[in-house]
Each structure stands twice: as C-alpha cells, then as structure tokens.
Length: 286
Ligand SMILES: [Zn+2]
Image 1 (cartoon, rainbow, N blue to C red):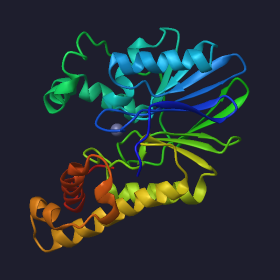
Image 2 (spheres, rainbow, N blue to C red; image 1 turned 180 degrees about the vertical axis):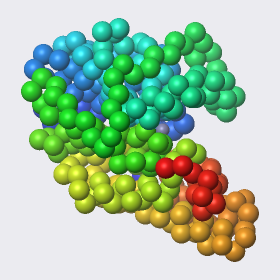
Image 3 (cartoon, rainbow, N blue to C red; image 1 turned 120 degrees about the vertical axis):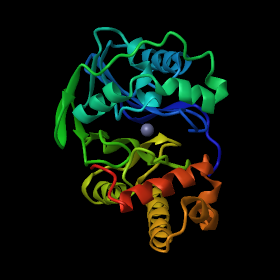
C-alpha cells in the first residue's frame, strides 16, 4: 500500500471523506455531509490540532452550520474532539458507545501519552463531551438537508457500540473502525469472529461503491474483503495455536502475515491474537 496524504475528497456532491496521513495510532478519518443548508460531520478526531484542522476543512467545503456530529464508536481518536464542536451541534451515537465513553472516561489519555510520547503536551485541559442523542438497536434513519442517512449497528465488531454511516442514494459507506485499510486493525475491545461476520454482512447487504475506513485511504468493498481476509487469517491461526496450547507470544512469532506484514502498526498482531484467545475462552460479552 502506497503512502497517502491528509486530504479532503469529495465522494459524491456534498459528501466528503477527510482522511489523515498514516492512519496510525490515534490518527483517524472523518467525514462531512453537506446540503440543504446544514452540515453533518462523522467523527471528531483526537488532538485539538487534528479537530481544528477538520473544522477548518469542514467550513471550507461546507459553510452551513454543523447541525450534527456522528460518533462511529467510543474510542478517543474519534470522540475526544467532541467538545470542540459548537454547543448547538447535536452529537449522535449508539447507546452502547455512550455507555463505553462513560465507563472509560478520559483516563486512557495518560496511557496513550505514555505509549505515544509525541502526543504529550497536546492533550492537556481536554474537556469530555458525551453524545446528546443515542439509539439502542440495529438502525436509525436520519435526514440531513433532504438526504437520507442510515446509521447501522451490526453488533460487536471493533467495539460494542460500532455504527456504520450509510448514504444509500450516494452509495457511500463510512465504516468507522469496522474497517482499516492498509493499516493493521486493533481489536483490543472487539470480537474478531463476529467482526468477520459483520464484514460479510456489509459486503452482502449494504449497497455501497465507496467505503471510508476509520484509518487508511478511501476504498471499496475489495479493500473490505482484503481486510476481512486479515481478520480470518488471524482468527484461524489463533484457533489452531489456542487448541494446541501455544502461548499468545509463540502464536504471534509463528504467524506469517504475507502481504499484511506491509500494513502499518504490525505489532498489533499480538493484541489481536490475545483477543481471539479471550473469545475462545468465552470471555467476551457480545
Ligand atoms: Zn477505534
């Protein structure tokens, strides 16, 4: 996979992907939907600098007020910027994502700054802002300036409260972190077996030509199929290793990732294998 730049790309009239270069740790993507005198933003990003750059781009391509902000899941690299949006912007998420935000709080920021020291000093005096509106079910139909927006929850994949944002007319799908393109996924709070089934549902049931991953460049269902194959490889090899009583470390050392070895953040493999082991032990609540 070639490198990509931070850029705003118009996918359909008034529908934009805001993709950040590298797609690495806490460097996520966002989306902007505008028309009919209002703007909807998908995900708020992480550091104040990242969120400010997204807000500047949003105002450049979509000058109407930001009526709504959608959080695709609770992780701070998608939600920490919530508080920098205008107070009158309505923040919408799945009920389970809001519950995860309330459970996790901002305590994770200290851990992140120790793991990634380049974020130190960029995360001081951060205010937390929770979603204003939630839904608790498989779907929520919204309307934005005459455009249909469907929020879809297919269960626990990357996290318990994942939401996909589907524009059926435009055939565009924002995956949040249900999709990582060209970047190794992180499943420390997910369920890899179920995540594979969710990828299948998206491929078979959701009409979309353009898919925007939570990390990585804009893609298509082909990219999602390749991503699904990574999850399947890790799940299958983990199962074999688990059944033969091999440790997570030994399983990690013995997997040949092939083409996926070129994806960013490859060291996440052991986290993903560990999560598969938890799944096989029946420790993950769906
Ligand atoms: Zn995430």
